[in-house]
Figure 1: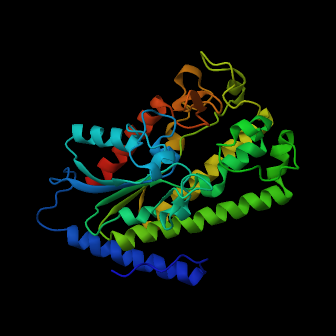
Figure 2: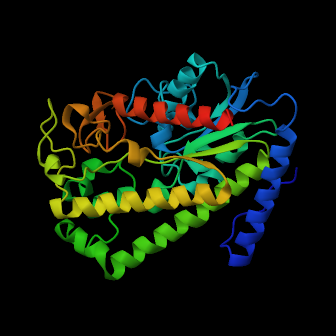
Length: 351
């Protein structure tokens, strides 16, 4: 199969053409799978060759130990026990066997890195191949999360926090959207003018890129089921809960982000969730709505939190220094991811 042409900014006509092509491929795959051996509601009799892709929410940055056997992937911070590993075991307990072809999830990945190589540590030669290279002709399942880094969520967080702008948090990728605008005014900044224009453009990019990603999975692995996984909820409906530190912690879960900006962060995350869900629906793919399932386990849920606080020490250390969670799932959150992903995969494979 010849390489898929490089991505370009799509026109409405090309989007429609790609959707029709993807639909034809999906239909062909369905027809090929239909036959006397197919039984609705029965788990697959044979192992399902599977590829996991994604960013730090799939690699589960912050949970140790993490893979260090490949120096190029060292800064992917892919936990040995990330949600793909845990979900695979959950499925095995239910009689659904996944054969892991590859887990190429990597911290810092944007949707673009599905089709292009990724520099894993800025200014070095440490690079990993495009994630789509893990797909094979016999891949039957592709699962993962991408989009948060394309949106620039860490840049949004830095726009709203002086603490996150500080030099000691340089490992958190990105810079504020507008360093001249004070963090205290971030809700106002993103609500109108240049900030809103920037945000709208980022959402448009996410929409285009996710559509491209799903088309590429269909192209390189025509018989693969596609499962897009959303992001767990960060901010609760009652933002007053974010004004109290979690048990055993001295920092507030969302540190110095102004309280009036917290509903804004939640709306941005909900919008990202909706864009991802729509991309999946338009492509005939499955979607795991973690935002809807994790409202009781936000970063502000105290002992029940499934998200580590922005400056809460994680399990990952460089030397003697533990790195912050930077609002990534802790072990409880990882288990919630694995539970809902396993349920969706089982549902998809049993159709």
